[in-house]
Length: 481
Image (tube, rainbow, N blue to C red; front, side, top):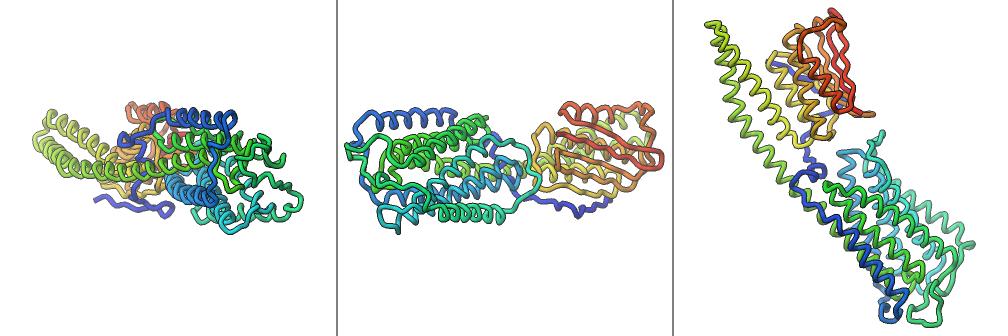
């Protein structure tokens, strides 16, 4: 029997990869038209606020601002937790930034809700400028997330550190505003009613108007960036783009009239509420996608069990009987039958590995390596990075390279031990090494296995290398940027 050792570097896991499996056909992506519809409706409402009567669009609801900000804060925290699930699986830079942006937005919104609930009117400089600068930072963080690359981050961060960074950043903001409060402008226009016909169109200090203009620019960049991530596979990007569109238009209305600091609900507040609704829809669809993916993953594993217990077992029996016939009577047809059955068995095991792994490259490589090592009674050492998800074409190539490399070691190397290592430091790196006889790599081997492995790696833009020498074993290495 083949033995197996799990390397200490990375433990093998089998937890669901729901946030990644959402990209399967089970997901139902939102229409790409959602951000466009949000833009058109928001623009119409904004145009009415600039050209129509201010009276018909204004409502005096003193506590509504606190309700809106509380809702925004709670939904942002929920979305931050959901997106952190993506970070745990993919460790992409843009997802990590999005977690920080959503978390910071939640803290700013809850702070604003508390100050508006307990403070008297008009608000003081600290209660006005802390959320104002906070919203500017949130908008910039969303823009940074939308424009960030999909490259993996080098240092993996636990959710505790995200929490510390968010709270620490907000405390630093509060300290800055408190220190500069006496130098920051304030105006009684911030608490004026939009029904006041004597007031000008643009209300508030110049710094307030400038800040809202910068928020508009940042959210416009964020909406553009998220909309360009709509590839039919990531539903959340659609709703983030639409939400940022409404938040940007809200800042345009706050640019003219900062109703967030008055007892009145006006167009900017209505658009912010619409943005909150879109964020909530995005969160609901993300959760719905999780459960759909769980159901799909359970079905895939059930199919894998059925194939393993049915087709694979029958193929293994046919291959075993054919090998026995070959030894007994030396018939070439028996050998061909055995080879065909073994090939079909290998292919079925590859399918079973893909179905059972449900997205985890390490798990699928482990299953394929075990099957190949068991065939030659090899001691298998696994050093596989957990929670690593790669594109389907890349994974299939890696699985076939692993199987071919172990088969070569079992057939030709006279080895007893094979190491399979998978890492993703600056790319995907696969290493298959044995301690067998080795061979002279400068000489033609006449086999198709090495050529096949090289072609599979290079077809994906990767680099294939093989290191070997007589009596020093063989190391096959594949690197895909």
